[in-house]
Amino acid sequence: AAAGESIDFTFEAPEPGRYRIKSVMRFSDDGPALESRLDGDALSSGPTELTARHRTLSREVHWGTRHLEAGAHTLTLQA
Image (tube, rainbow, N blue to C red; front, side, top):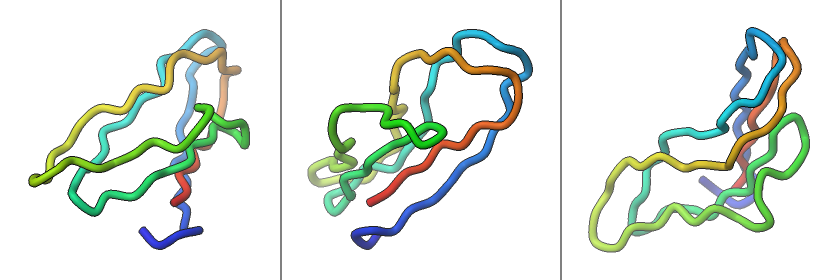
């Protein structure tokens, strides 16, 4: 991903409650550093590095748990 590019993922929380926020991402030698936001709020204090030396692999990235109201939410990832 080029610097400044972003992608939004929209999902539904079926009911109010605490949810684990995670995704599966591709790590590689040239993987970007991504800023992550949920409904506009930062999920971490800094970027998530998607680099893996000498190979490409998929791995779960965890951003902890958050209280979500029922309805639509947006996870935004920005390089």
